[in-house]
Length: 367
Image (cartoon, rainbow, N blue to C red):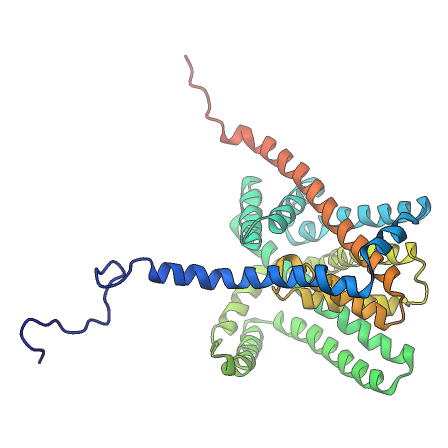
């Protein structure tokens, strides 16, 4: 029992207690949230200011870019246009009834927001939902579209690097690469088989989700994360929401997603070709591009800035490309996949706001 005049220790003291600085926990939370962005910025500065100049000088890059001919620029422009133009069809396949114009309007607007705003992914998803709802699509169709586009994009992002490694081994005739290629081929078959199995029924989806949750829990346990016990029911819910679209449109969704991803790779090929890098095979370029994109999907820096450039450069130089031509091609590729997104996205955002304005303006009352 505490002595007279004293108060028992209260472990649940509120934040505004006089004995505790009110801003302590707020500032600690802000500090924790700022650590990631600050470290990411340091990584970006270090890569562009210290690492890349050790590979080649920026003056050499400018000189190499100045030598690109008009025919090469036309090919690059065509590849960039093809990539932008193929961003809408995956959504058309995932959301029945969505027109090409509206799909392009939505994808370019949300890509702009995702690229330039803090917490861009959340803002992009919220904008997609708002646009689709404004076009009178039902909640079920919107949810199914979001889930399907995300799943198909992520699956293709993983499948392409696995395929490239599986094909690269036999083409090189290297024993180590052959072993890695065989493992990659098995992994690709497992991924495709898992998708097909999950769509068979609710019970299959729940079993697969529970298995994946247990595996992830085992991996994350040393990091004090998890357990992931809800993956089974969540996969069942996603299957029920998407099965109607998947059963009739999976082939169109797959084809549209592949076209959009591979036209992006086409931009890199055009940039490499403009530098005369014919010693790097298409498979080698595909492996470097796809694995770097997979690495950049881990949020180390915003949009993979710096990580993508360095990873792609290291892989292409490792495959035999010259340092200056490779760095020039990679930086040109990154510039041409970023600037058009900003420009086209800004135009689409303005068009959408203009089209939405009549819906926001109050209806004048009759006099």
